[in-house]
Amino acid sequence: DKVRAQRMEAAYAAGDTRTAQADAEALLGTNIVPDAQIKLIQARILIDKAKPNDKTVHQEALDLLSGVTGDIPTDLRPITNEYLAKANYAVGQYDDALQAIRAALAQGETGTRHYIHGLILEAQGKKDAAIREYDWVVTWSTVYTYPFIEDVQARLDKLKP
Image (cartoon, rainbow, N blue to C red; front, side, top):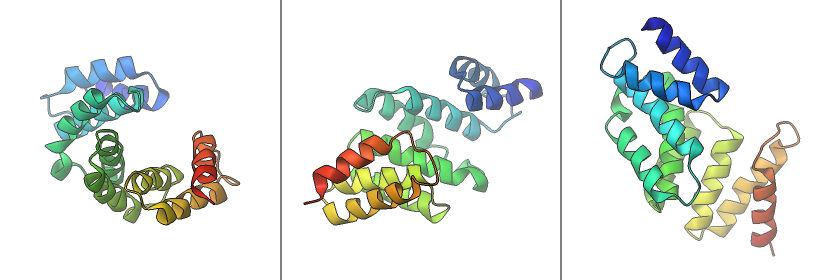
């Protein structure tokens, strides 16, 4: 089971969600890895694979995360908050999404987190704040490659006068 737990982590990191999910299901309740961490991986798999407008899958991920946030180790809390923000945004719970992404950003800034923050702010009608977030991402895209940079640029073009 200890090897399975390591394989689950490695499979998720490598994008082998089928193996990661199978291992997660097998490890639930074994106490090899805390169930909170397993549910986090399961929620991440759901969100990573979901279509942006698939509210059912995002709600399922929220349900997995809702009972575990207090049990997540400190080093995984920024990731947990980022995924909570993604799921809440997808189901239209923008205030909850904003709270989660702000917590994630407070624990460490990333391009993805600023992008999500911009999406949430834009959805809330906070145009100027969204532009600032998207500009942050564009600035850092000269250093890092972001797979979502085209969407960021399109949103900026739409929002800027």
